[in-house]
Length: 307
Image (cartoon, rainbow, N blue to C red; front, side):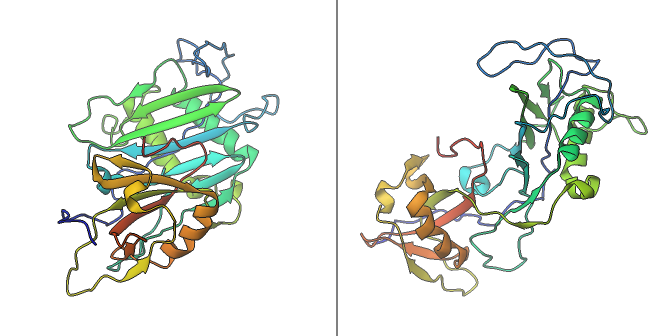
């Protein structure tokens, strides 16, 4: 049996249509900083100021233990934002690019894979130096300025040398016409954000060959079945997991929406199926319940989207 009426939903993926999220890397505190950042666990960790710009040979590399993730949020219903990947993630010397080109067809593919490349220690150090130059690694963590209601917000988490920086800013902030953004301002955050959006153009020699990212977990949102549109009849496939939709993960908003993180053996069963499915595909579980899915890869260090 199927769920009752479902609201019309937008399955169009929202990649790169708003301001693009960028990666930020932490290092030493800029001269404009006034206090040390907070280390994990809440303790304050002193740092030594280092001049802005490219690191000198005497400055140790920040690449060891470095982590970065940048993503965007907006006040929309989860079905409209669920498939948004973090725009950039750097973990264990690998750069995961979440700005994905979606084929301009309908129905489009259900699964769109991000790409992954190695990034050199020199590339990481360059990002750290640029962040320091923009004055983003001091005591200030909010660079939102005065955003409009409902605006897209950018979030960056950076861990370097055991210190965590959690920053929020407006990707759309701009400096006064013709002026260079002042360090530590909303415009500086946006300028850095924009530069890191084009990481492959900014640091092409520091990135390795691109390949499809193979996730260790999937975020899955099961929701009422998609209605047929434009005369296209949705296809149906068997839900490959033993857990029925009624027991899948946790409710998100209401019982009609079930959210789960799929890993391990279940991931091995589900991923090949969703890779062959499209936005109109309906999945039928063993209880004969029919649902549609939103699916995306999860990246290292990402929190549970179902929580």
